[in-house]
Image (cartoon, rainbow, N blue to C red; front, side, top):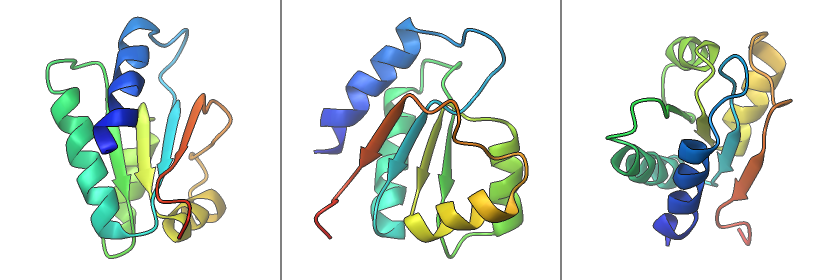
Length: 110
């Protein structure tokens, strides 16, 4: 199921590169850390030969400071749980959602 939305996203990022400086263009929200890890693995596998596509995993249970450092690099794709996303919106000054082009709400029925 994850590949159904991940593959078109990776294809779009490959064929529509950054216009200016790197920025986060895709936000994937999932309800659990385990699901976020699974989604991140799929994106990493799909983009393993596209070295210009970067992703970041941001969930509870992982080190907040290392996540902030990863977000400062402006990855193309951020995969997050809602709670940790809210933490970064309020507490990570360099993190912004202003350039998001694609939003995926995985398991939105939860």
